[in-house]
Image (cartoon, rainbow, N blue to C red):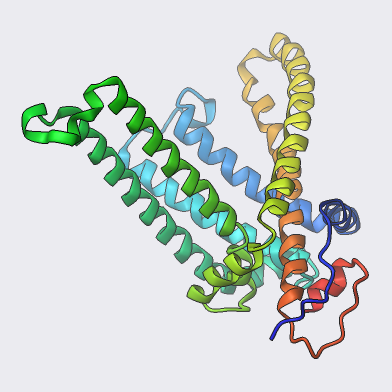
Length: 295
């Protein structure tokens, strides 16, 4: 039996507690976020900018790209684990969080690859169905060749829209999945149910939180882009060969974006997790991230 009398935090309270957490423990959180952003930047340089000065001695290959894709998922799972451990006060320093993350991120890594595999299968099935609808002969295919008409094309777009909508809804219901995996509060398969259960009844609140986060990120991205454009104009005129330094400046900015996204989501998870505590336990409804972490 769960406690239904605990008042859930509002979106503004979640953002307020998240800001307080970032402000109080900025340095260790920011170091981990910078490591995550730097790993992402190096991967982006390797995969998408082959004329970058750092990449002049590397050759493109499918195997190398695949290896770096795997490493990106591995690095993301590891640093996210360290960040969650810091926010949840299971680690007090960056070094301690990274040491603990070595024992915690494997389950998240396994689930990440599993979800990528399932999503890849769905994409392959959808593409194959599209090919069948496009190329099967009209007389032999019957209804499958509806794609050849305007009505069939609209039907195909409708199916694509429904599939995309289902993926988005499923992603929102599973958005809290990493946290029970990292904190080891539940088993791997139970974590899927826990994430669904925590979001159930708070779906639109979660959507509102994500939308507000995206709005904040868009505003900050535009502001950062304007400032970096001005810096780049001056820098390139002085040292045109070192233009990649401007790209590197996005790493600390991206680290801030990571904190803006992850800390409120962790706070949401801790708040919703309180609702699963036994009803016999007394509940303090005063918003507090520390009290939520104790549950």
